[in-house]
Length: 243
Image 1 (cartoon, rainbow, N blue to C red):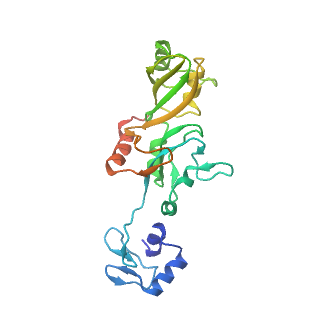
Image 2: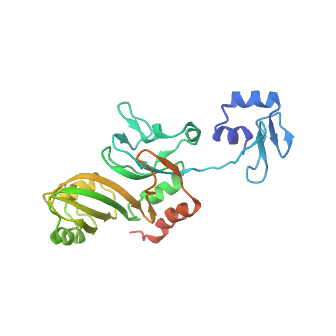
Image 3: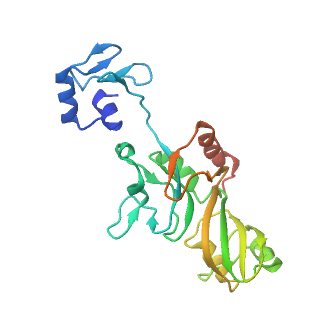
């Protein structure tokens, strides 16, 4: 891989900036000063340094975010703040994007990455990767709702959802529930409850596949996935059977 691409991807500047660094002699590869940014280097085998600082190269980033409300799951929007706007500048050269989406009024687990292949596998409708939500429902959720969700709900457009797992945490005028669905139709959780004459008034995604939201993250906070968490996320695709 070209040295200027490696350093550019890691946020060290444009090709023009990197040429200046070469001129000043502050870039080294395996201890030797490099004068040409176009040389090819194996970032996994060689030691790259800029101004005495070792460059820890990585091709992909995986960020776990506790998405707040009033922020949209997009890379750009004219009218609203996006999840990308919440990230530190050091992540921007990787050009991350949200893996899937959460509605503007929904909180919780969202993965941001630049790994298009993994994102495609996770989001593939053929995989039926489970997504688990915690919600407050305006209305008394009961055993009839559990049975209906287990059977599959016919939405307002005639689509019949896959069977889902509804757990009642607290039932009353305002019920607290946990719901696991195996697909991701538009406003699906809200529409499912609407067919039962009930309204979702608070919604938070707490798990995607085998990966769970870190409850230590405040709304709007994020961190990179650990290696173990990344393996859990990747394992979610192999644990689900294709159609």
